[in-house]
Amino acid sequence: MKIAAITTAVLCGLLCHADAADISTLWRQFEQAKQRGSVPTLPDYSYAGYALGEKGIPPVTGRRFNVTDFGAIPNDNLSDRVAIEKAIRAAASQGGGIVFFPPGLFLVSEEAGVGSGILIHGEQIVLKGSGSGPGGTEIFMRNYLMPEDPEMKYSVPAMFEFSRDKGESGKKKCTTITQDAPREAFGIVVADASSLKPGLLIELSMNNPEANAEFLDGLKPWSIWKTTNEEGVMVRGEKHRIKRIDGNRITFFEPVHCAILAKHGWTVSILRLIPGWGAEDIHFRGNWKEAFVHHKDFIHDSGWSLLAFHCGDSPVLRRCRFSDCCNAVKLAACYAGTILNCSVEGNMGHESFSSSHFSYGTLMAFCADTVTNGAFHGFSASHGSVGTVITHCKNSDRGFDWHASWPYCSLIDACTGGLIGNGGNVALLPNHMRYLTFWNFRQTAGEVYREYDWWEPRKLNEEYSGAKVVHPVIVGYHGLGTTFKTNSCGQIESQGVPVSPASLYEAQLEARLGAHPAWIDKARTGYKLFVKNGYWQPID
Image 1 (cartoon, rainbow, N blue to C red):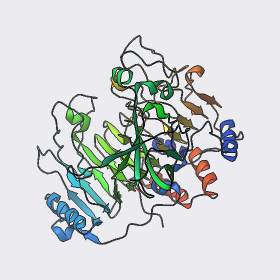
Image 2: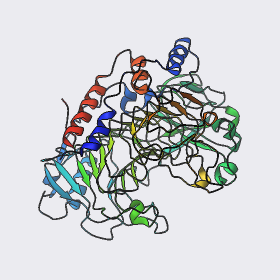
Image 3: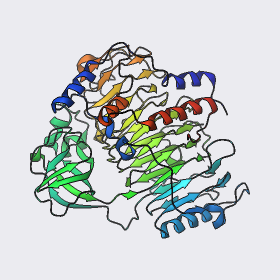
Image 4: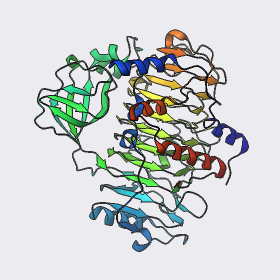
């Protein structure tokens, strides 16, 4: 299967960035600040993804649990769900393993009216197929699932749900932060570090209306943003792994992406996230064929949801295709998750790839939305996520999604597609707080805006009147000709012309590691093959 020529040209565009003659002023300032040890204007986004970007995702290893050994038979037109669940339980009982799917078609949702997906609670479990293209593995969801609450259109579970067991506690408050810490710091000072140790994951939390001025950069929230005004912004996405402890001073492996003021009442909790989850080399296909209508009912909003990771420590999704679905993939409350060389295709649905519910350091790299007119909500950083990086991706033609509930510090890097496809609960706006950075974004689709204002209303006092973003940083935007109101941006540089470096994420990662990471070249090659062939394949 090959992608249509016009789409191929757009997809290829993000791989063929022309070298820009002008080096970005903000990039020079970032380098100088790092050398001096001061706080740079640009956050250091390079800590997103598996192993904080420092090495490639290794081949999966461990005991293999072939689903056919548990009763699954490909291509027989009979349900394989029970057999797949048996294989998953067997892997969990052994402390993890590879749940393997040989080539062929596997059926997982043959019965209508079912209200639960296939649950995966155990550690170190990877769903592995035999390729996402011809001769590979296809998992087909014939019937939509039912919602947990019929009144909540978004409450349908995913067909495959990686999560902690509902009876397992995932967080334990242990201390408070006692000293201020600047943005991009690698540590905090706490009241009592006796329950902490190196290697633990912890969560820094704060919910205080007095912090609104800091997180909204002095902008005044609209009166209809009820929860933000009355309860304040909520921060829970600062998830960090402890590197060292000196008395009550805690040092992290990765930076804090906000300024911490102790007077706002920050707490520290020990986290229990599940390691070793993943899925690779599978074509996940739904049966969603209707014309999408936003918020029409639960079927349109979430009935055909394929894959979700809840509370994962470095979950990995690579070389997978997601077709004819409402929601492709959600990473919720995860740390350092990665979606690499994946695509969403077929009929328009609600959402594509989402970093949500207070995740930290999610990386989406060399991925593509080839849905006709794009997913309704494109690649997403939402619901309190921190440090999300979307790099070298062909996004939805409708645009990116910042879905409110206080996400901050997200990077849109060397991507193509539409500009704005946001949503979100009006009580929980703005759509995105500080440090949303567009770097060399090329707009190839969607509405063209003139003097776009990221804060003030454009449609009288309507609740939803454009994306509400706190002073975004826009560098090297080019393409269809959208322009931005300067005083609504934090920084705006090189309007209409790309800058150097071509990729901020790559440049920051190279500067930190002292070398170019080989895994990026492999991912780029994988993307080129997808553009050529229409499916993903392993790169040796």
